[in-house]
Image 1 (cartoon, rainbow, N blue to C red):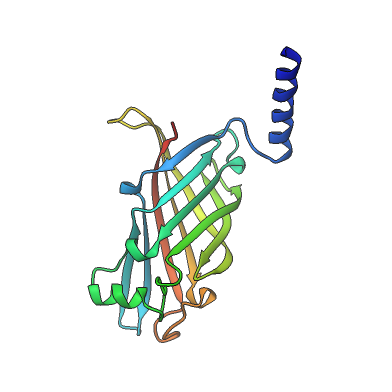
Image 2: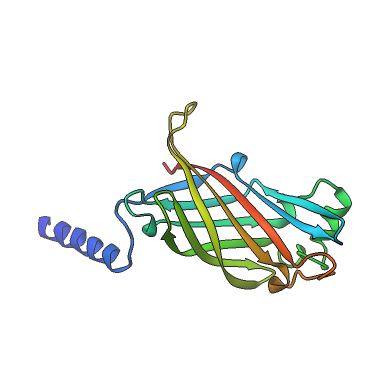
Length: 195
């Protein structure tokens, strides 16, 4: 029996090493109440218009000894979580002209690599899927803080990230270039260590 247990443990270690998984990485779940994605774009040259996704689910594996072994994924229910501050625009963005939430209600991101660029900064490459179109994007990310949450006393972490997207890459190019094809995206996430 002891031999079998040792063999299983050795196999698990070799499997994790072979797949690049890190035994030092900790699992975290996003705090939906403090995780937001803000996007902005130029409207006809006259103004900058803003919108937000808030309340989405996500997970991360965080390895403070080697950030390159970290990962992140998230899922956004566009139909429920898109807000622009004006009901008419919200409805238009959810229509077939843009996100077409009746057919494609969910957008996802899953990292494929993390490249540290400093002690607490990294480029996170991953697959973004919107309207069933998947493109590789690169987030410029900064780990803000890792430590105990002052109220819950649970292990907590937070990061910010940014990227500029070309919306026509995802079949979201309605009215371009009059309404800018480039969309600036800023992300801020809090997450608690999974129990």
